[in-house]
View 1 (spheres, rainbow, N blue to C red):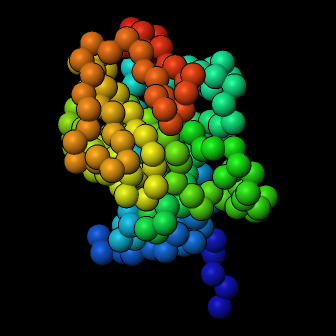
View 2 (cartoon, rainbow, N blue to C red):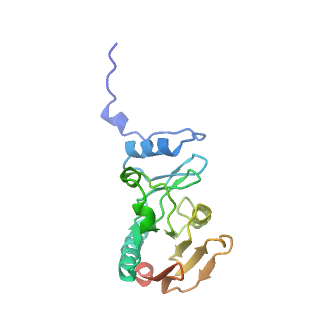
View 3 (spheres, helix red, strand yellow):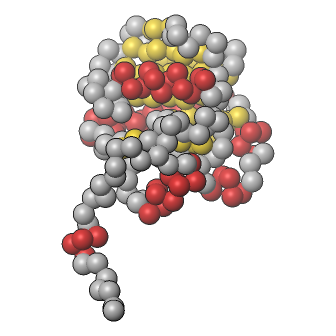
Length: 209
């Protein structure tokens, strides 16, 4: 018996996955390769996390964030590699997460093999930045992002910045003090402190979108 190939309309149907599906990081990578337009993350327990597209305002802020962080690294002359929001990292707990922006110390990045660099890099960034949406709902909401900040620090991140554009405020998450992030009101800029000296990020272009 010869089976006919699926019709083009069938190929366009969204894939329905069982709620109790668990994936390994390797299986998750294959899913991402098969669905290049999907924005997905993987939780530490193997659950797929579907990241819905951002609103246009948040997208513009993300673009500004990435450009400003890259420029801040260049000006600081620190040995850091910058990554955008589409970069996934395979964390030690088995999750695969994609911060809105992140930095990895250059020696850690260069220690990876070419194959590891082309895949989800098996490390946790040294600095992560997340940009909260106006709503507290979904994977981009404040509650979910705070859980992610906890996860980053538990997996080795040294410094995290959670940006709250609606309030022009920032939560600073530091290794060893994950439960007590420092909050900056009406923040105009951020700096890397002792961990990343000379790293300075201007927030005005992000707030003023």
